[in-house]
Image 1 (cartoon, helix red, strand yellow):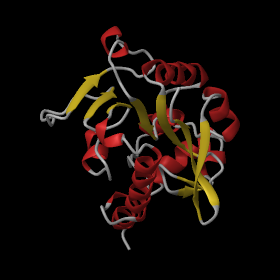
Image 2 (cartoon, helix red, strand yellow):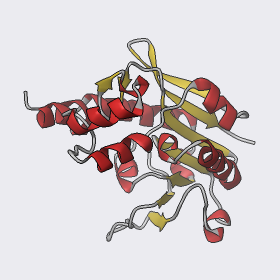
Image 3 (tube, one colour):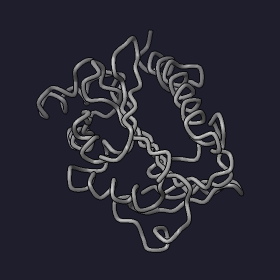
Image 4 (spheres, helix red, strand yellow):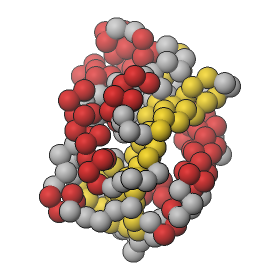
Length: 219
């Protein structure tokens, strides 16, 4: 099977294994926050597609992302081009019921910026759901490569240039090392440090921890 077709079946297709995991997580979110449909949720680092596919869509969603906002935004959403680690004042002054973030914390750029990201989460609302892939799951989730996260940067960069299942295939050394250095998977001790007042949920696959979710359901 061609690598791009394999990645499509494993990750990118709406019927893929990863899509089923995302639906499972969306169901879990809805069960954890039964009033989700009435909430104003601020999504740090996300995209509108998450909420188009959600089991339950909040009444209002504000997405904060470094990317250029899409040209078409539904009436129930608002998109801000901003840094979640250094939010503009008008975003900080907003009224939100919950902060949501999915697979973003591992990409914000080091310990100091993760501290700032966590501070943003706590400042915006009393409730939150912050998910990140678990460092010690045997498959690196961005490249779908066994044990890649444990290799030295030089070998991870070489693998990123050649591994056919990567999320952003590239042959350029500069692009590959950029991707590698902007991907830092976290463990439980780190998540507990960043979110000491949260409940730590563990998403498991075949009994193994696959991702960590810091959850706070109220003040």
